[in-house]
Image (cartoon, rainbow, N blue to C red; front, side, top):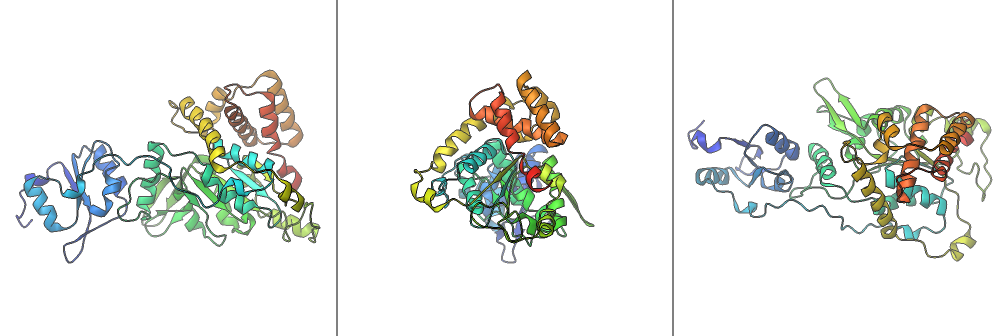
Length: 420
């Protein structure tokens, strides 16, 4: 407008950033999504804040310049030359090199629970841990990031885009390479979990996309907050509608929940007697609704390990050893579903389950018998199939066999013990 720059200098370019009163260009949220949109619209070059350069350069085929000030912007456009910050234009490598604080080798005993956790991570299945206080539920959940498989480039792009829109990216950071682990407090509101605010920003369920959402002490969350999880758990997306804005965010995450079986925590425990009445236990368990429980693939009891077993237990497998098996199973799934637009067994819908979870006569009969005796819903039936598919993948087999189905059925038994 001032005539400082000829109009042709900025042809086929997008310029975005926040300008301070001193002429400095400051970072802004949502740069990755903005550059992706520019690429779809045929824009040739994007000029963005230098602190956002890592996000912008993650978009293949786009020329991205990082700008520090308005003065630098003018000089670069007049000379048609990128600033020095753009010397490295390679994509951000997808690696997982973080050392996690919690390791599976620190968990003594609990072989059944470790097995269930490995299955859940391998297929990205939702899992519920029920047990008394101090039995290791929270520690086990916090060990799971160490066995999560690395993200693919597409998954990293999706995850970074959401965190960028939410303003969670640190200045100078690039593509996220570690799967997110979100653990909100039980006082979290519906808006903080699902998303909201005046600008309909993403909530915890979207920030956990392609990662883990961990709710510790599940019954302590408000009933509206828990019921709001039903749509993202089923559809993998969440719609946030406000008066001034509305948005739809991806929310395909692995849901981990832990809880005590009663207010005192010792109902069903082998080490300590419960002091709660039947009415108190029922009222406590009813805070978790049947529809929400139905969306959890794996339910497992976590009891306290006797002190004798702690001292006598052999050294446990490390997270690195478990992650190696998980990664092999996940690679099988990625290859199998390459043309289907999904990444893992938990994302199978009814059509794809019928195609990829075919059972032989003996397995079919076993599953039908379990449905009749345990009163499973059709949703539970489908989730048992998906878990059985993951069990077969862990064996390296394309064929689901009866032992896979039998083990998957066992992980659906706790709703009958506690909630019926």
